[in-house]
Length: 451
Image (tube, rainbow, N blue to C red):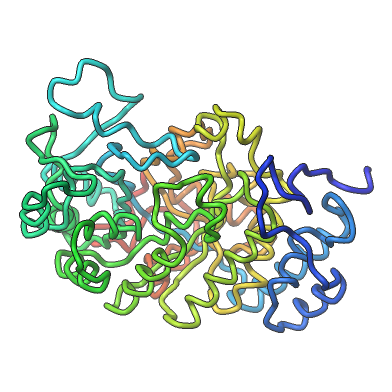
């Protein structure tokens, strides 16, 4: 075995970007690991030492890495025990139309390609759903036992918060990123109409990222509290902490210069919590960032949780590079290594001492790797999904659906306890006995297996 697992992105700035923040510390790996094992609150320097397996060496030291993973797995057992949770959910994204231009994304289609009279073709599978169509999809899947509907969409120029927001934008001489719905083949309606449409039959609606909330207030002086309060009244139950990518602006300026900055993302998330909406949190790593950026991101999530207490889980998302502009333009050549994935999960568990649950995403990692990460500090195994356009359109290869029966088989195979959960983890059902197993927590679930 080689002494070190090589990684082009370890201990040095990645690519040709002259970043201010680089993985250099005055801490030692051994001291950082000792603090982690003792359950002390880690510093950014501690986190960098653990994420790099020591800045005193290049590459990832496999022996040190295993010590970090062991500490994280022990912490996981102390915090949440041997249960592995999952939620029975449906992804029902409304539109791929978007003009933001993020270089890591292949989900979007230029909004102009959806306009009336456009001669070309949409991107592969591009779509916009009306509120009625979105509702029909939810109603169809309620009978299959779903508990949650997750909806994350592109920033369609015709999308507005409500009729008052549309009236305000149309009164402006040059409204920001707005065109009237008549300009498009399909009218997406308003965010309020979409929330009302998908909040049907008692299902839990998980939607409206900070970036979408910004789109819903553009051109106005409305606060994020007003936006999220209005959406909550329309049926929104919780907020996905996506659009975070890396919460360090020098990285955001490279990969998503058209998106809101770190401070505004945090402001929106705090506002959602302030109106009583639970939130999740994410990181998307393995592109141009380095380990210092990753740990700075974790520090900002931990600080946000200290202020709000609203974050139910942290979700590391390994960058899928194949069909993205970052890859096409030669800014990245690959994504994160397996060792980096393991360390990302492990350090998240050790650093985020105020976030109870860490998720392993089988959509991003695949089944075998996803199960491995459940022994690196993760305790949640995502959801049934039923449809996952975002990763698929970036070149993901791990499917779009996972049945309860498959969950039970895989989780038991690694000696852990399968638990069906609600979005906020407050309602839980240990799946016991022999199969076939089906969902039980959804408003119309009756244990019938998902097929």
